[in-house]
Image (cartoon, rainbow, N blue to C red; front, side, top):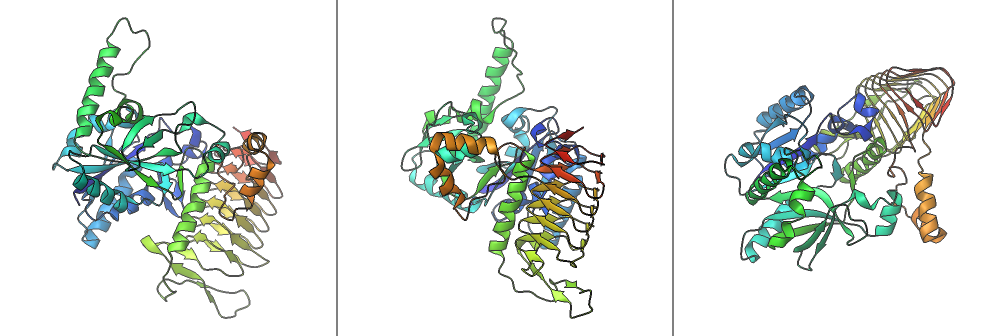
Amino acid sequence: MTTTKAIIMVGGSSRGTRFRPLALDKAKIMFPIAGKPLLSHTVDAVLKVESIREIILIGFYDVSIFSEFISSFNARMRYSKRNCSIKYLKEFKALGTAGGLYHFREDILKGNPESFLVIHGDIVCSFPLNEMVQFYEEKKKTHQSKIDAILFGVKIPDYELFLALNGSDLTSFGTIVSEENGEVVHYVEKPESKISDVINGGIYLFNESLFRRLSNAKISKITIANDNTHFDFVDEDIISLEKDILHNLPDFGNTYVFQYRGFWKAIKTPSDALWANELYLDKISQGSKSPISPSSSVDVTNSDGSEPLKYRVATMDQHILEKPSSFIQCPVYIHPSATVNYENGTRIGKFVSIGENVTIGAGTRISNSIILENCEIGSNTIIMNSIVSMNCKIGNWCRVEGTGINLISINEMVKKNGVSKLQKLLNQDTFKIIGIKDSGNISILGSGTQVDDDRYVLNSFILPNKTIKHDVKYEIIM
């Protein structure tokens, strides 16, 4: 394999406003999902491509956001004797989805890589990168000229349903039209009507020809920006990969689509993060084959002094998920430093991630939620379809929940497709109702929030460092 570099576009603090209020506490790209940062999932997937020797992060975040992550990664590579390094290149301003690629072209082309991966950092999927690279190699052998690009296309099995569950927003996804052999003949970014059931999945494999096209796009931007007859403002530094590059690629006949049929999600809102947590926990649990061993199990001391229960099981990437028990409905991730009181009918799961130094009282029930580090949750409290940010304190007998259903999207789907379509959907075992486009169907507690005893929080966003002394329903507490 000749693909030796991977570029991950991580965005920046000037973007991701839809991820608030969580973005006020953590950079979206570093938000913990299924027990580790979103970025870690992508990086771990890249490392499975053995030919990769360098990972470059490009974005507009402050350098300090990634310092610890990069240091830990490079130490891990040295320890494992893996020949791969990682570095972060900060844009001088937000440059769009391709401006950073152009600005740092010398860093990317250093060492003359024949091809390189470009990955949007805010997507979740099973990342079949080895298969994608192999697809590229096969196309090279059968093609007369160089392959300019491989696009990662997500095949949508039920496009109308997909749109209904995403608010029928046709302008959210680029679509790809291809021949039977995979050659791309048409690419439309954010179409006004359906032209294909294959959408752009945000992963690409390019060669050096990308930079010739980026240079042409840059020249075009400069020309327009300095044209006195053009009255709309054009920022010559901002280049869109989708509009300025992908839109024209099919004209050259050297672009192919790698079609993917697995789970996929772009993380734009907190609701998306909750769904991604569910998807990744499920994926990790499906890949968990290791038996329990003394080194990977943790003892839970029963209050009655009986034999402790060994209930953890190791998974890939040093992850530890909980083993099913009378307390745990899998899949569930609990950080080893967390303390859970399993008395009085405590139940955790499904699809729960609990961070470092979290304390959970007796009789508490948590499902489909993310609890970040250093939180304290009182006894007999219920948390459902919610995200609790770091350093929160929730009292006893509280209820923090989201409904998990976007009624606008459901009503829209029923109106367009009838009740039978909805019933068919709800009967599917694999269907995940949480995570529909907007974030109105979950509750979020910003960092440092305190919830007094016996309070009810429903479908509400609480910004950081607030004290909740009364019930809150369908509100944003500023």
